[in-house]
Length: 53
Image (cartoon, rainbow, N blue to C red; front, side, top):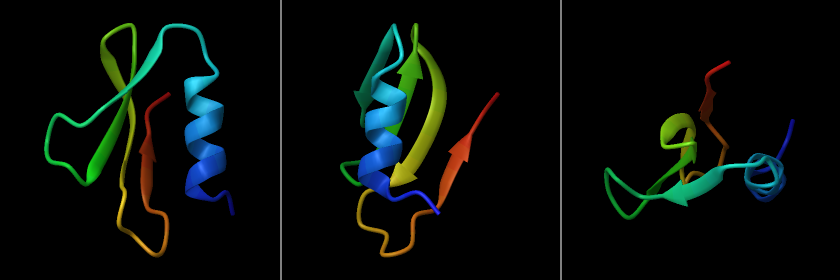
């Protein structure tokens, strides 16, 4: 299982990515060229994420 820090670093290492909080202050969204790619809740003790390929 990957932890939140490693997942975030992996996603943000890709060209054209950015981290935003469009829904609330707790839900991070990674966008690639302005399109949502991944999201997760910052306060979760168990990482629950959604990746779209």
